[in-house]
Image (cartoon, rainbow, N blue to C red; front, side):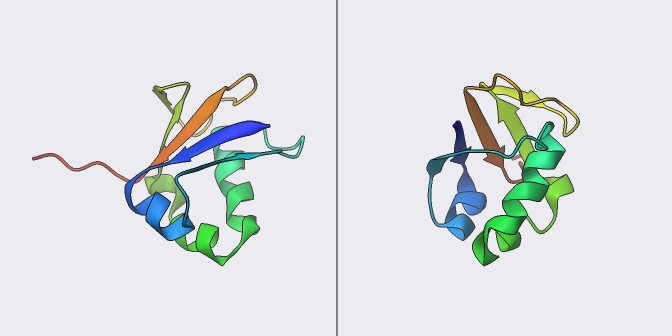
Length: 84
């Protein structure tokens, strides 16, 4: 099982703050994860319709979409961050 944590409008659109899911063997990278999540229902598809804009952290460290997720204890998904 992999723990996923959703933040800001990603959380609002999916309708939950976190969940634990089993991932298929073909989900190897962050990009694969985002593509897989889009298949889980309309709310995921809406939240992740622009996957290139989603920022991801593995075990609280921001990573690129080509980063492998093997061994991750927690994966956080964030919308784009704005400065202020």
